[in-house]
Length: 421
Image 1 (cartoon, rainbow, N blue to C red):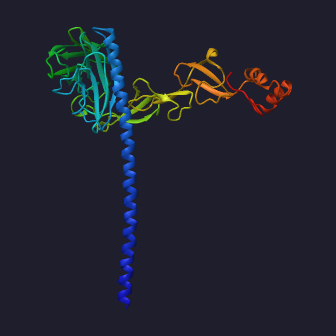
Image 2 (cartoon, rainbow, N blue to C red):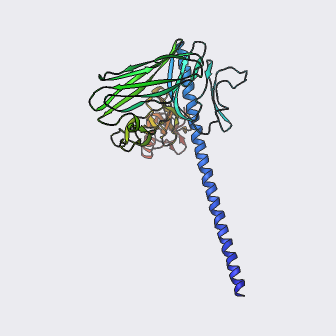
């Protein structure tokens, strides 16, 4: 009997635990579904912003004509299917090449333009710069003409030594491009050299460029400058800046003592000496004698996109705008008060604009964002009295009627209503 009771208790405990696990599993699934739905809504909004910004920029350069060019910062959300997304038209399609499309889990977010467009989205999701340029008969959209595997150079050296580093240049342009690299450097005692400093890249071509530094007996310290990379193809060109920092120490330099640094990592907006709209970045360098490096990087944002009046946390008379920022330091959402002017010619008493009642005042506005069109309010006495007095003749004393309107604050009394005349 005792064994039976113990066995029964164990079974009951297992049943209770099973029910608890099922409940926990249910809540976990619901929470995951909520997160997936929220992320999906966020990705949909970002995709719409990106498509509209690219389309607006393409329309602008199309109107400006041959040689017009814009460079904008965009974001491609992680759930976008890049294989099904396109600029111009889908592969093998016979439709006009005028559509910009991002495919989001089978849903197409697109805009059809007034001019022909060609090009490609970035080959990755995330944030980055793309170039929109008019080529006369069509607009080309895509990343810049060339991609560099390093965007800056840092040398730690001792006096009377030399060092060099290599940057790979890869063409992402559909025609041959010419590249010319020049230095902007005004520190005597330290010389720079580039090899090669002028070359051509074919479509999808790649070339390594060696940047060398030779330091004489200069004082210890940090010396800064930059290289200007001029990229051109026909009438089109872009300019890339490569900052260079040379740190001279009394000992150390090339070989085992040279600092090698990891990638920059985001720390926090406005941290340390950075302003509120700057991201503080930090990176580790080795060997251990090399200091941890910090820098402040300005946030980069896309253009503002109108969402709608009264949307989100905005009031009815405010326009909500959103944008995407690289680091999120800058404001990404704002409510703009609509600037309205009273349209006296469209104001009056007696309805005419739903949902105003016939005995309410219709006050019309001319607004920049059209957030306000009219406002319903109490009927003005000056508007109603004349008509109501006319109706009251032979029924009641007009003076009593006027008093009743003022005291009651309504345009209704007995059988007399203030309706449109």
